[in-house]
Every structure is written in structure tokens, then in C-alpha cells.
Length: 314
Image (cartoon, rainbow, N blue to C red):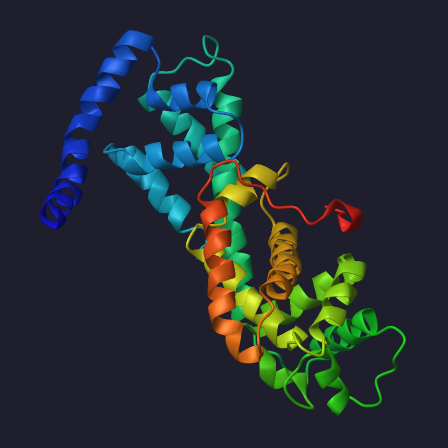
């Protein structure tokens, strides 16, 4: 059985590689539509359509399409304007596939939408990475102001006695100065926490109260930064595409990433309480279990995460 599975896993990609052009040729002859047209006309708008368009483009052997994909993959490194990239992509496909816009008026708008989402996702990755590598700087007034704003939002009834104080441990930082806790995720960790505390204040304060539970308590801020890492890696490896493409009525943007983070934090808190851990030493296995369940959901093309309606303002 092991030998057979290895045999299938080795040869299946080769078979698909050689059969794919034949299948595409047959379907084009019978339907009079290219693969991209069949996707744009037949698949529902959102992750299903956009991801299938991306797969079709990435599997193409045409040098023009490969060049297009190379440009898409460089968005997170270089500034490539969305309008120019979408125009180039649509023109390239219409020309190569000999699709006449007047005969197929629905194709260009549908395909453009998919390209906009793909470009937006790569741009979002670039913007998130920029925040992640920006380290917290106590000499930067903007950084300091955001940290103080976090405290005021999450602890509105308790004045902060000093910039460096044990009070920070009340919201889950490790020591007297939170700046050292942001090293791994940089300003992205602070921006995520601040967004949760301001845009979902009721939920954030509820989660903070749970973190003070006498038995199941945990470090609110440290766990929050850890969940920033989870969201970051899901975005980076593409797992988050299903949610982002299904929820982005506008183009993928930083707000959508922050909202994904808020969902993860709120749901992790619920998951943690339901697991009833003996102590904080169970954090890693419970976190891994939680991440596995989230990734399982993201593997489904219709996945769309929303925070509970009674606190939902997406």
C-alpha cells in the first residue's frame, strides 16, 4: 500500500501535466470557451472563481501568461499599480485566447475582478510585511501614542500611572515595558491589538476579562501577539485567501487583515475556555489544535469568518 501511494503521488502530477492540454483542447472544442471563460462564467464569485483563475494562470505554459504571473508575484516587492496590472492582464488574455469583448461582454469584468483580488492580496502581503519588520521604537512619538491609546481603550476606567509600570502586566504584557514584547511581530502586533481594542472594544474587553480567569487565565497581550503570528503566516502561505476573497467586497486591504486577526482572537478565547486547560503550560498544544481547525476551515472554498453578530461591525 505504501509503495502504491508513493507511486501514485509521484506519477499523478506527470499524468496531469501531459493530459491537461488535451483536456483543455477537448473542452474548448466542445464548449467554444477557453478555460478562463468557463471559470468566470461557471464558478461563483469569490474564492472559488478567483482561486481557479489563479490556478489556471499558474499552470499555463504560454510565456506571456508566465510573464503575467511573474509580475503578480513581484507585487509584494515592487510597486505595480493595480489599474495598469489589471489592464495588462485583461489585454494579454483577450489577445492570447482570441476572446472578442463584444461577443463575450461578461468575461472582461469578471476576469478583471479576479485579477484585482489577486493583486490586492499580494499588495496586502507587502503592507503587512512592512509593519511586521518595523520594530517598536520608544523614541518614536507615534509608536508611543499608539501604545498609550491601547491602554486607554482596553482599560478606560484605570489611569496609567507611568510609561514604565507593572500595570502593563494587567493586560498581559510580560514586564514593566511592553516594547520588548513586540520584537517578533514588530508594529504589526501593536496595530492588531489596537484595532481589536478600538474597533471591537466590547469584544476585546470581554476577552481581557476571560484572560483574568483564576483557573483558565492567560496573558492577553502575549497571546494576542502570538495570534498575530498565526494570522501573518496564514496570509503569507496563502491559506487566508479563501476568507479574504469571500469577504472582500472591495479590494483586499489592511482592515480585512485586522478583522481576520480579531476573529482569531475572539474565537481562540472561546476555544481556550472550552478546552478548560489545567494551566498556561497547555497553551502550545491548544494553540496548535486551534490553528489546525482554522486551517481546515480555510481549506474550504466557501469559508468566510465573521465575529458573532451581537458585537459584529464588519
